[in-house]
Length: 183
Image (cartoon, rainbow, N blue to C red):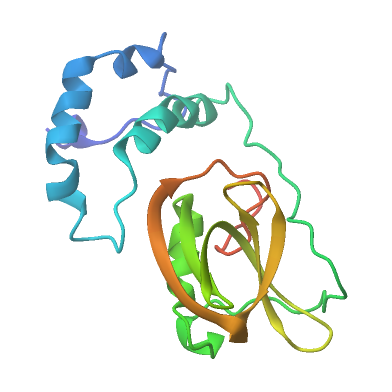
């Protein structure tokens, strides 16, 4: 009886003949859409867009079944001298910043743009990494969503951060979230 509830091992998993077939089922998408906010909105700071999630599912299955490789992206370009030995701390308390950097980390992990208030104006950015200059300044490395321009923002000059619901497709490796080779 217990065997009925056990998941098959990875050797027993057979790739679906057509993983995109599920994506064509409008009833499945409609059911998910009906419950999307009720199930998840209370658990997340900002709920990612359903369309973004839905459109990514076929790629996830292709990767799971070894039919696609994870894209290899380079690091965001940065102007200036960096302290290459420095790594961002993993814990929220260690950031020592007046702005909610965990919100930026959440946005990056979920491929959501951030509304950034910097030098008295707002801009929509794609967050990629946090670096430290040789002068000791913490820098948020990002791309302006509207024009694709790579920028760095000094942390002490950031006046506000709001996670948006605007999705982005990464141009560079997202280094704001913990990662290990192969994941």
